[in-house]
Amino acid sequence: MKREPKVPVDAKVLVNQYVSQCELLRRACVGFDEGSDVEALNIAVRLRVLLHDTKSSKSLLGQLQIKDRLPYVDTLRAEMPEPVIVIGSGLCIIEGTVGPGASGSRYKAPLSDEDPYRQHPPQAFVDWWREHVLTSNSGKSVSRADFVLWLANEAGGAHVDPSHDPAHLEFSSGGFDGLQVVSDNEIDHNLLFPTVRQIAYELETSLTNSVAFQDGEIAIVDPICSLSIESKLKLGRNDQCPCGSGKKYKLCFLKRRPRRKISIEELHAEMDAAV
Ligand SMILES: [Zn+2]
Image 1: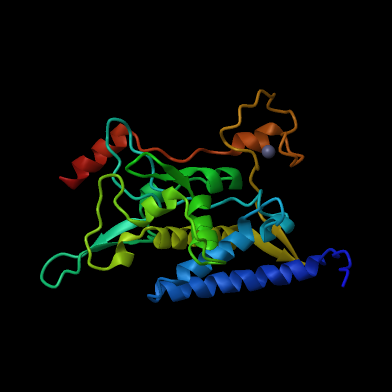
Image 2: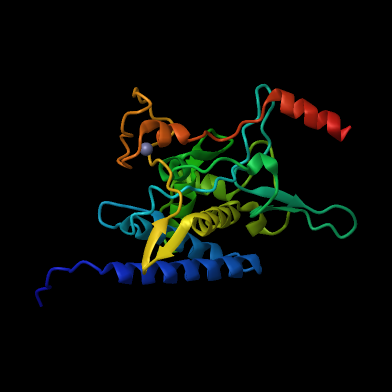
């Protein structure tokens, strides 16, 4: 049978799809938080549906035209000043137990951790999705997109791939930045699952903070400039911003703020306070 050409989906249908996908994401996160680690695979698939564009498929947030202007919550631990060595595992923390009956340590998603070093100005999608969030002991740097797509496309979220990205295998075995998880449970050594859980936390918080429903349509309350913060632009402050927002450069790109870094003074003050 010859197939008829596809027809565009109505905007209201897209909004309903958005509500459904957010609910599926929320349920997968609840399951994960209740101890079902494999829910990380479902989380990864929802994140892919919402965020990932390819040549043949378009993300749901992209179709709703909110993906590039959503201000994304960023909870990556702030960079330490040189020559301090960074100890951490990207978006995860390592939770340990001590004393009699201690079960070792494991990677964990910090979620709404109040750690001030994990609080940054919101980021544009292009930086949030593709920025390197962790480097392996062999020097491979990976992004949020890598973590989500490994679980969605290779590890059984949408399908099981017979071959894996070598970096995927390396990051599945744990041991980064000089830290090693101590546990008999294999899943504790895998930081992919809690990392993807943390990415879902960031996205859900971003959507809750910035998305509003108006007359059955979705809008962003305070849209962010969609250009990468690394963009090298030579413009006058009153020129139009090249991102297409229609705003002046000074009211769009120049309002972006980089991720926070920890200064050596700040670190000293903290050490003094701890003594
Ligand atoms: Zn702009």
